[in-house]
Image (cartoon, rainbow, N blue to C red):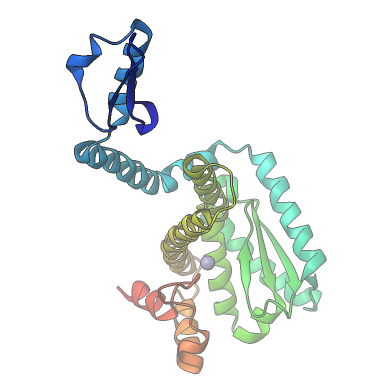
Length: 290
Ligand SMILES: [Zn+2]
């Protein structure tokens, strides 16, 4: 009956005794030829009744839920296991790629770069020792706009566009302290590793084929990453506020800046919302004022 077929017993008279599929006849098994008894027991395993279906569904659901819960911790363990030298090399490669594609040399004067670097240097001792070597890279990138970002290793890129847009050194330092928070908590590396865990998990669940299902699950995975990234942004904001206060700068500078942004262009440039990759400015202002 393997594969849901009928059972056929050919009798010595030439007659064929046929049982329709899906019915168990354990009493008949003793009459089967020796080799067919194994087939019969396999066939019984194959018959999944509603209880079996529920059981299998529960197994799949718990695997999926377990996987969902495991993404962050497993990714973080992988991030911690990465050799520092490898991370630094990856970080340099990302910077080189960005330089090739989007970034050019900073147009800030050397004096201005030195002044920002010196102020940034005051923040470094506040981060854990292994991040005290974090480099600040000055670049210009009109295509990216006013921004600064932390790379997977100990590197922060500050764009001229942010310096001129913010037009306030406290804001620039608040942003740099925020990026240093990302570096100190290894947020970029952890997000990369979490996304690797999602990729591996999808491969294990669905195999390595390009199906619509894989796209859908992948989309779910990226939602999980975004949800994580909101938490990481708020964490970096709060580290920034603390460190700014410690070096005698305005800890509220970043929050005021976000307020200004959300007041000036409202929902248009507020990256929050259900499917957004970025935390809403309003959420961030609210989190810092709690
Ligand atoms: Zn951030």
